[in-house]
Image 1 (tube, rainbow, N blue to C red):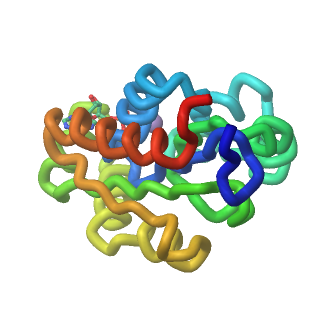
Image 2: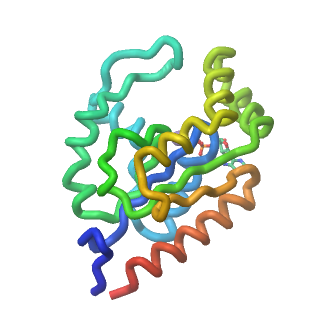
Length: 177
Ligand code: ADP
Ligand code: MN
């Protein structure tokens, strides 16, 4: 069996991007095809009570990032994870073999937020986040360019295409035993 450069038998992939860009949909579809483990960080933090109270501004729990990192340490060392989260800066750089940033056209995103029933404030903040490419800048600060993959996620066909792209990347990185 070939190990990748990190020593993990299977890669760890971070799928990040502004809320609504399709992280969870893409990660779930990719997990189904590749049999990698989908970790939705927000859900995990809620299930394991690794939260720090309620954020009134965004109507969600604050995640205790240190506790989440500790709780996921063994799984991350083992490899084979698709980590689905909108923040990218609390996992150490060495955790990931590939960091995927999903990007969606602002008007498409606006529509998705409205469908989700976001408050005006949440809608405005998240829209700005995409417009100003906040996430992409953070990813570039935290991870080397050569593991960064930027993918469009405007239409349903993009999900299929992105899953195919990532699946072939994964199979090149960790050939079958
Ligand atoms: P995130 O996890 O990034 O917040 P989700 O995967 O929950 O985003 O997707 C938000 C909504 O947008 C869902 O209703 C999903 O079906 C839809 N969606 C996601 N990606 C796409 C896409 N590429 N094309 C069309 N609809 C999408
Ligand atoms: Mn999600």
